[in-house]
Length: 244
Image 1 (tube, rainbow, N blue to C red):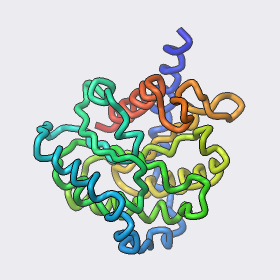
Image 2 (image 1 turned 135 degrees about the vertical axis):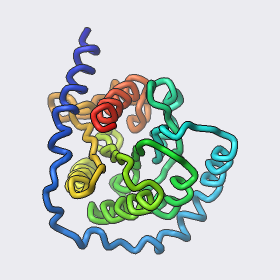
Image 3 (image 1 turned 60 degrees about the horizontal axis):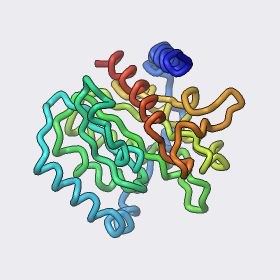
Image 4 (image 1 turned 135 degrees about the horizontal axis):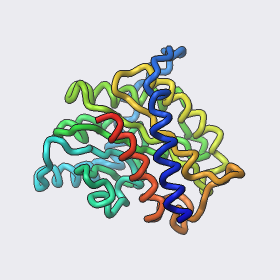
């Protein structure tokens, strides 16, 4: 009963927030969009080229309907073993690779996106801010996502695009203030773009004291377990239902 009530509350809260996500408040710092993407190419290719080629092999062997939902991102997308059933009645195209950062996705965006026809696209990339010395700033994250969005719009000008907030986790909770700032910056940016939506998840994965709810994560306290994925799916489908 408690779990069913929680899911209902999540769905209602997300639906209620949709109007706010649609607002067209001005994005004040336009300099945040000026990111030199090419400086990331060498490192991205050296680390991830083999993974991208494996995804391209799947592009050749898999068949998907034109009204699919394209999921692109890091390990939380890759590890979602039952995404096909979790996302029903929507058909999911799963294109995730472990450890991805927005600086990598920006380099490979054309190859990850252009092979597919889709009704909507969902992105989750969770590794640009982890508490390390090479963490990106919120403005860099915004600029990289803006690059990916521009690439996507060349292929599909009107499909709704959903940016899932980086999840608050116990493993990276010391970096949560920086992660939260990046989430906030992305939310502001999304409000300036047509058919571009930010999906906040703090109300799902934080408890009443503002701490991560470990019952929704596997032992590494970073990646979702099945209960966590069930809540993710409910949130995403709620937004898809209200936008499609």
